Image (cartoon, rainbow, N blue to C red):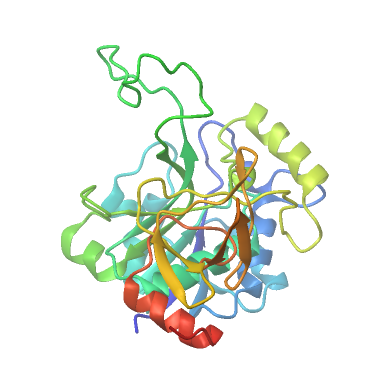
Length: 310
């Protein structure tokens, strides 16, 4: 089993919004919000704050479970830093995988972090990144729409779903980076997308986004940093997932079953029995439904745990 650390890396000298992570934000700061979360994440093998600035190092007085990684000044200079220099501190980390949590995404909940951790424990890809489902119209530099081809569809509430990176977290392979000098290949599932709730998607780059995020944080977050959401959602359009169709004589595994409540997917857990018409299904996902599918072997194992016999 690969070991996993969670890391918050930050700098004072952000270009678009200077001192962003230490500016007053909803009675606290962005860096304190991130540190509060990882301070509670005792399921990780290691918890780190990777910084150069003394103002950020001083924050660790209040977060006893988080260790300091002292970065060099060239890693945190203003502007764009090349990736080899930016992540040079990976040499100081002791785990196989590194879960990078972005402190500029304050709406991500501890529940989402925990679920992403569980997913990477089960899966075996080189790297991962956080995504949300999207039906946006995206055009290439020549003006061609690359996310739509159906000329009869001008709506954004139907059609193919794509995965849009949120930059809330990345999970990286330490040794891969040290050997190659880059973090992923952008090949198939490298990085592999892990879904997060749209309600938690908020990456702060400028003052306007800072103010909007602060409003949302004050309005919708409870004291445990769990986002208050009416619905969960399904990301994995087109991927394979199984549910069990219950019958009087046994069961049948059903692929690509999605149970909807209006236009929004129900938030369900392992063992839930949901109805679609006159048919009942036992759902084999839990919490937020991440992008990946379930193999038949895994379904059989879940059924055993639930006490369901063929």
